[in-house]
Length: 93
Image (cartoon, rainbow, N blue to C red; front, side, top):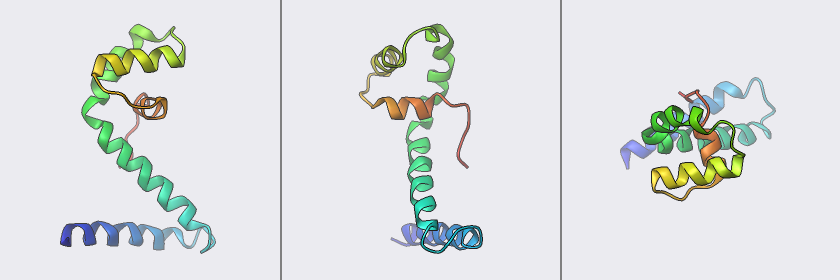
């Protein structure tokens, strides 16, 4: 529980930093999506390198075909949105 509290406090510290750039009513619209994206980035980290290595082999395929191939390759069923995030060569840290 203490670890969760530390993480929640960190999120609110970042929110307070953004408060100057955003209206108070709007910064929640920024914090939650970024928190979700970061969580997805963490969940996909284990497969990211494998996906990025395999991606050049299927670059000429449609997005839906890439989604199917990558899901089958990894043995998991995730939506195209998650694969799209995993295809980016950036980390949200």
